[in-house]
Every structure is written in C-alpha cells, then in structure tokens.
Figure: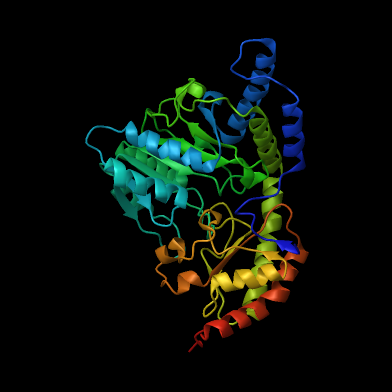
Length: 399
C-alpha cells in the first residue's frame, strides 16, 4: 500500500496499545472472580476504567465497556427508549447520522413503535440548534453526532445538550469520529443539566484512536434511566452483563492516553496536510468541490478529513482506480462498505442522488505523511479522467 488515507474507517494499532494489550494478557483471571488471580485482573480493568474516565471527563462508575462503538450506540438508544417516560414516542434523529444510529432507530420504529423526528442539516452538514430544540419538545430520546463521520463537520454539542435538557429528555452523543480529534468531555458537554435529562450517554470506540478493534465504551450518567441489552451477570452497574475484556480495555486506555497527549500538535499537522491536499485537488481536477466546512478545527471540520465531490466520476470507480495505485480511500462510512447506494450524508446536504454517488472521503491520521498526499495528487487526476470517460459524463463548465 503506497498511501493509507482511510483513518476514519480504522486507524493502525498504536505501539502503546499493542504493548499494553500483550502485558494485560499475561494476567490470567476473570475480573469477576474473588480469588487473587481474578482480583489482579480486576485491578487492571479498573485502572483502565479510571484512566478513560479522566480522559473523557467522566466518573469511573459512568464508564461501561462494550464490544465497540456499534454496541455502545445500540445500548444507548435502545436502553434509553425502553426506559422512556410514558406517552413519549419520538426519537430526535438528525439527518446524516451514522448508520449505527439510523439502523437502530429504524429497528425501533419497525418493532417498538418509535417515531423518528428528523432535523435537517445546513449546507455544510451542521445540525441546527433551533431546529433540534423544536424537535426535542415532547420527544422520548434525542441523539446526535459530535462530528459527522463522512464530511467531518463538528456540531455544537453543548448547545444541543442544553436544548435536550430544556426539553426534559435524555440525549445521546456519538463521539466515535470526534474522539482524539477534538476535545471530548462528557462533564463539560453535560453542563448544568441535572437528573435524567440532557446529555446522559456518549459512545466511543478504541480503533478510531489506534486501539484494538472490538473494544468500545458508553459513558452513562449515574442519573440516567437506561435498560440493558444483555442480561446474565450484573457486571458494570447491571448495564452490560458478561465477562469484561481486560486486555482490550487496558489497550483502549493506553491508545486514548497517547492520542490525547499529542492531539493538539497532531491536529495542527493533519490540518496542514489536508489543506495541502485540498489545494492540490483544486489545482489538478476540474470541477472538484470540497463538501463541508473549508476551515478545520474544533468548531468547523475535523482536521485530516477531506470529502470531495467529483462531478461526472463515480466514487466507486475512483476508489477502485486509486486502490490499484496503492491508495486506500473510501466513498463513505466503512459500515456501508460493499453497498452500492448514494451517500445519505451528501443527500442530507441537499445534493442530488447522482452527486451523492460521485464523492470520495480522504481521511488522514497519525501515520499520514506528505508523501501520502503526493501519491494522491499524482494518481487522482488520471483516475478522475478515466472515471469520467467510463461514465460518459463531464463536469459542468462554470459560466
């Protein structure tokens, strides 16, 4: 592989996480056992929980380890829905959410009578606070992405959390794409909310920050009313039964610790690389259009995320041609890999279905270098030319 630019799908395992994972596996014992071996494992697990709590701005008791981000989202939305107030049936679902959220809400609509209330995105993919607040009135649950996983737009989570609190409903935040890229603090985002309303749940995943695949966490406020998905053991406040993954949890904490230590300088570096990539694409590819905010940062776009519309060129064709050149990119969420459908995020921006099939996401991360950007700019113009020739379409000529 010449260049890996799909860090938004998964990021390479950090050495710190690998070493922590191996060391933890040398300790044999079930952390729920009361003998010495079990308690040794328990100490490792609780140390990891405490470290994650510090890094996420939460209390250790609020950290519930899961098998990944998807399980965390499922536990939050289904658990909050099942514990909802009587008579409330609506779930506030902004347009352009990750499929882990969209599919859960669709399932609850089909099998449990939930009613989805959409909230439109603006032209750069941001959730409107006023529109969100209006949708939250009388709802059962609300959810939102901290940062869009496709186009990288960062949302105003404190304002959305305050709107949910004012409406008296619980609010879940999917911070999986944002983790390690912008400051993520459950306590700060929750603000002055009290009780079971406002921000009460936050999802994260280890592999987005260089931890192992198959490990995640849901931060659950001690005040939240939430029903578990799994039963059979009573672990983790009874919210997630089952033998806990000690080594995975330890590796997650090590990875996030390393990611947070370098976050500010790394995001500045990635911002420079992504700006260089954008300039190069604009200079070499006619008609290419960057979607989402042009600026990067904690109030605009995730640094390292570049989402581009290539009029007249099918995204799948571009992905294939770049892959042949040793360059890994994506057309959208990896959770929809292999599904030939237009990006629902691009559609939520008001674009046409044809345009929603003509996009690529370049996502840079810790291992990305200037040579990776050079490789893209070297091969992309010819890939676009061939993709446009294959489609028989041409980009519109500016008037």
